[in-house]
Length: 257
Image: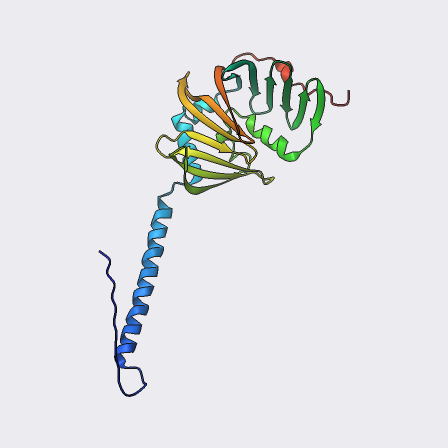
């Protein structure tokens, strides 16, 4: 139990300080130094308990199937639907690790992104535009991998564990990732389960919930996206791996036409 030590010395006569004053002054300096060292040691002990960013990510890969299984994926095809409105669909196809295609279709609109070996083209309602922003290309190069979490090291991202932060009352390790071009991503992995719970790219927050094992792979079946204060919820309808895909999806349209 902590206690408060107070010493009062009344010294009459001479204005010189007694030997008791110097004794207590020295004692307090010693105690202060010891307290500082103790606090510093406690801080270091807490810091040492945090696993490295690499270990947090490696644990996530293992709990959702393992690095060998994910590395064996050569093609991947996702289909998602907006919760409550099946007319809004997302279609994602990957030819790992070189090509990525994504389409978003609604009742009267469509948008596609086509990435192939460093080239990126967006098409909005038949209007084609070539994207030259290095960071946008950098992002799609990452997404072209079967599991982006296994690609950070290969693509030269720096990784730091910033500590524990709560996401929806769930303690998570906050992992800061920075690409060679300076793009920052914050990934939040649950301390208890190891699952990836949220990805914060500054422009958008993506939440991953309802993990289920599919063909030996752990996949979130609910994906929520918070964009400009609006939460959008998508449901995974299907996921197919290592099956024939439509190669024509990866032909980047000619933006000059």
